[in-house]
Image (tube, rainbow, N blue to C red):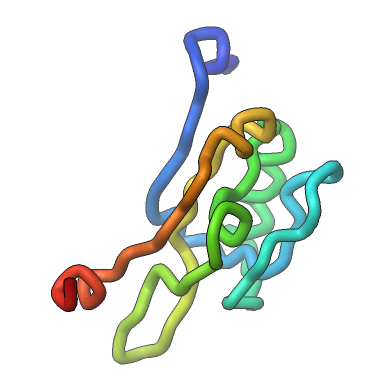
Length: 104
């Protein structure tokens, strides 16, 4: 399905995918990663992103941060994905946790 015919596509949310430092683009520098774990879902997500020309905003437009913090540890499973040509139109990307919202 070619959704970009209708306009720009952006995907944000909990993908339950651990992507570590998997490369999402051949033309962009590597992104900064705070969580280096990879899993099968992460590999599938990156394969899908490559075939759709989507890239991670996490770790590129701002500092990468953990998106899941629980008693079992910290991880990055929530991502913002945009078309590669739209990446530079995002000036700042910040992950805000519930705790950081309570402190403000």
